[in-house]
Length: 129
Image 1 (tube, helix red, strand yellow):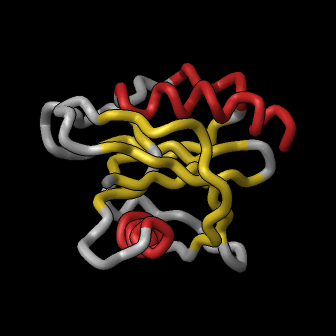
Image 2: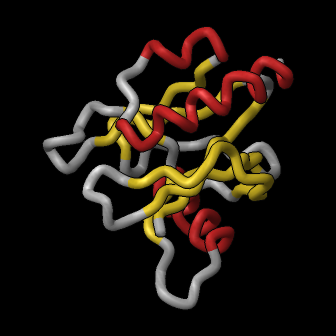
């Protein structure tokens, strides 16, 4: 299981550019990663956001449906999330971070697994802005 965070602030969502591995470097994703054995999806997301972005998040509702990853061995689940106490995300493991408004969602090349989530996010972001 792989979890991702759609961190939304003021009608914008945080997008992260992969820096590695080379075959996906420069493609964009939601922050997150693998759920470790014995770890809940929410706990994994909190841990991954701390490791990748140096932020604390409060995890909310699921967004979109399960997305089978490209290699077919894992499923991606994405949750809405909010930053805690004004934490400011830093690109600790990504080459770049961007806050995207609904009309900017197509301005970056998303990883294929994240594309269905982007579509599910449009109405959420539009309602939040």
